[in-house]
Length: 555
Image: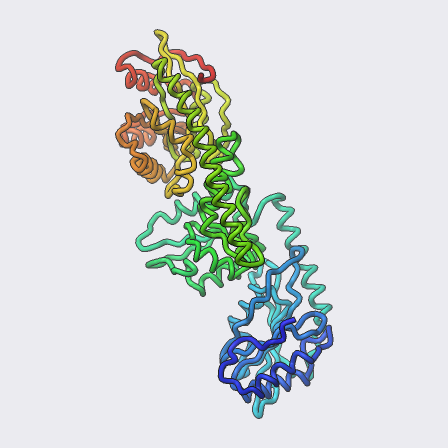
């Protein structure tokens, strides 16, 4: 075991270092917080050095760490990652000195919570280095009161009679019951606190939070609470700043959250810094979307594309002692015993990326051949595009009597699905359903999902489906338009169909649609398809009208 004194030791005399090292030889009764003799020794040394001194003591009574701080606070060493069942504590208690005899500080209580310490005790240093009052605090499970800690009344060190073993057994049982109650309320779901950071004049915070909630629901994550912060610019290390991050993590742990989800893309450096700050799982928006894609991929193409996107995202984040990648399915593990293992993981990730890219290139050639055959027959292609969950798959199914997967979830469709749509006079088109867009679509996803996007380049006409009932429909239109422009598809002929108009008052539906020159439909009602079919036929053949349709699998 490491017997070094850690912390702010610069400037201490060799004799003082030796005096601190001798503390490791002492033992504390397993049921006592600290002995009067050890408390007196700590206060004498602390008064002499004018620095706080802290001990991390195990439940066996062994001194695991001796730490020196400055006059006002301690910087605790890395005590490793917590293992064990939900509700368990670390099995270490912090006993330290306060030079001014003050009660437990915010830093003390933050360390208590973030490290899941058994308890924290502060011994006031009195006149002549004698021990003053002892302040003790421990965590509380989530209750209606909102209290996160319990602070015991201060007592003299000789009157300190807390039975640590009995206290921890009671607390761990209570925390375990709370965790079990949370888990049983929605079995099989992760519990998360979500964080939105508005930068500058950001005024769409409510819409972004609503969208993040929907992403969480789709991923099977239960949102316990939302934390918002507005900043002029992101904090380069923690995104939200250290103090705010502490508040977020304290809130998450108190609520029993397992995960903190940021409505932003964390840089690799931010991801590492935040993950090193806590043992909670840290997820950003791109990782959450990747998680959804991994759940929804059905075809071989889709699964390969998801894995490729995950690896490209994970590669710059592969570091030792970083657990941020734990939710990714198909990625390479980021923890290892040292640099050699880390480099092996990076090399394997690059090799896998190269292999997946080669496989997808081969599949791309096959798709091009199929599209060429289709083009040789002169069959026009109509691609259905739009924001995720706008009703594209429902429209495809009801236009063609197809069986594409329909769900009230984001990104239910990942693989391009094509069906044939017949018009009178032996005319037919191929309708293709594509993956839904979303604002700030991660570049790795755009690069990986070439299979879906290729269908857009080959299309003769785009049908942009908009959820007209969504309060944020204008922003959704802008997001889709921007993505199409980024894909060099802005000049492609396009029809706009406002879906879910049956959820609006008729006058409001007309107003919203006319402002964008859009057709009004309900993807659930075939009776509303006439104007859309007429517009498709007119655009493709510049004449004709809509009629009854028959469907079959695309060749």
